[in-house]
Image 1 (cartoon, rainbow, N blue to C red):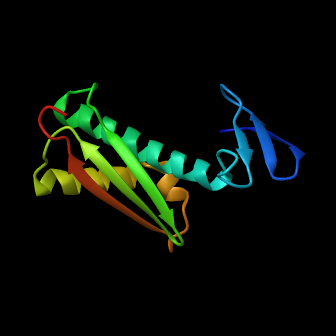
Image 2: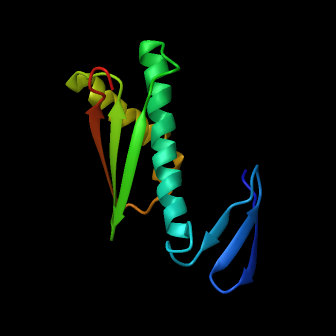
Image 3: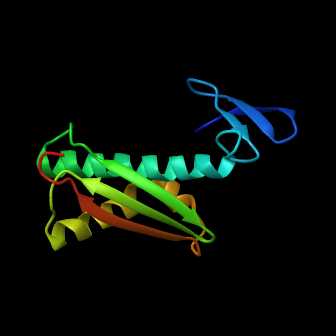
Length: 126
């Protein structure tokens, strides 16, 4: 179970009280993070952690460098995940299935919300 308490102290401004550091949200990105940007962060972080878990279970590497960028456009989230090494098509499909099964944030989204995950690879020396 997760529990947070939200304080709205002025128009389009909130602070949370929950686990760890309080999160401050605003009504527009000009002022800081918004509820929608927090959704971006939550989805991208969940996908990244799932990829880390897959990498550890598949390759025994719990220090793999995974980078994820995310964009939201009306009706869809578009993620670019940079992996430490090239995967075979079979392993890439297994990774997609793993994320679909394990990412609880993705599972909470409405079925008509598009989530596109593209995989890229760190170039040597990067």
